[in-house]
Image 1 (spheres, one colour):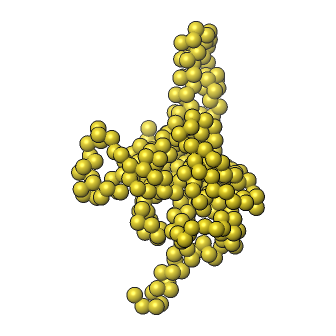
Image 2 (cartoon, one colour):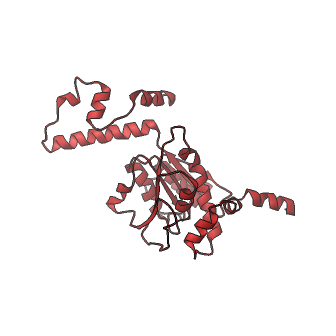
Length: 276
């Protein structure tokens, strides 16, 4: 490759784009001293943040919060906080990276195991979950947390592959034909009903980004299920549940009764658009 082509390639690189940011010095200064693999970590962070950009700058002007799981050096979380108008960013890891984060507004780093039951308390319907290189089966937990919560979106780059379930009969065929890491990512994408994309600008050989977005329809159906589950739990405990919850009320009134306050017209239009 000649010098001119090398320069053009450099200009398009994630590292070059990052170093041109006014906030680059703030991020690097906050995390100093940082490991020698900072170039790789920056490219991974950029691969994720560039994909959540459209979700953040949406036409409804919703303000999201971001939860970064398995944060390690929280390059991705801090970069997202410095770039986007989100309400807050929380980085989580079992091992705390102690730095002075005070100059990063609305940002915190907490020491916590993502298998703790109360981890879900950090996640709500305005949460975007991100994770850069969760190792092995930690990636399954990341996908699981998206599934069991009302998180609005999930963006992560898996690292070394974990254990595929024995019942997943496709595993050997896929391993032999597309590769072990690719099969692992495909499995994770299936778990969270997401899609995957190889990012060749990422400096790591583990460069597949998995993203899953919860649509208006998904949010509605999950809230509906949660509402019925709550009603059934009350009934199983012998608590009185009014029949008005099931009969004699409009759909909107019934949904509000079980804890759902949504624009039904919007939900129905969303379903029509998806041809459901």
